[in-house]
Amino acid sequence: MRVQTSARLLRAAGALLALLHGVTASCSSWSARYQQHIEGVCVCNASSCDSVSTEYLALSSGHVGVFQTSKAGDRLAYSTLKLDASSDDTADVIIDSTRTYQEIIGFGGAFTDAAAINVYLMDMEVQQLIVDAYFSDTGLQYSLGRIPIASTDFSEYVYSYNPSVDDLEMANFSIDVDKDPLSNKLTLIQRALNETTGAGRNLTLFASSWAPPVWMTTGNTTLNCEMQGYPGGEYWEALALYYSKFIVAYEAEGVPIWGLTTQNEPTKQELATKFWQSLR
Image (tube, rainbow, N blue to C red; front, side, top):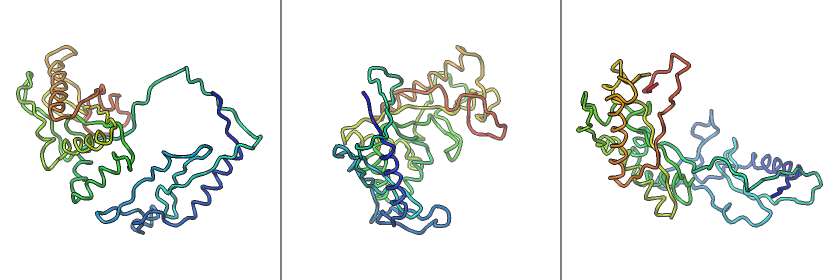
């Protein structure tokens, strides 16, 4: 397949962006709040909250959609640009559709404690607006989410799903901390799933651990820690069981786990000043 793109089109697009740069605020709730640093924001509350245009889904042939954010106040202002195919000043982009590489399975973000805590500090109406903004058809339509296994550097405190020392059989494993009203992490994930599946879309969820329970580490700390024992030893097998119980527990709450990463940021830290929960 051969796609031609015109230098004139690129100049036209640049001119359009320059024109849009001078447009006044496009959002209905634009505010001069934080004007000194980011030239104002769109304030979202229960009575007024803007959404991203979905007109790009129905573009006519020969047109492109442009989203513009500017210092003048535009926040994802939408417009269309008609392509000019008459130029002789073209460049060829050749795409071989028969040759494939890695597959992009989605775009999204992480369901951290910090995210859930801040969402649930809002009124119910604003909570739903936030969920809609990320997961609904009129929002970003996130299709991928990462779930931390226990606490991270985006948590209020260090915790695990099994603080019972040397409980290698994981008899005391529990994800109740994620159900706690002070956390709401699991509830937020369930709401996101309901939003996407209700719209006929999928939300692929994978999990990452920052660190094991503290009693599994050599120095009784989860900061830049190392596992006790050796690969295949009792502590390593217990950690594998810990992960598997997490998957089972979340699936019992209606949250399917598509996969696990080896570890959050598993490489050795280059800066000694980095101190957060991590297994190296």
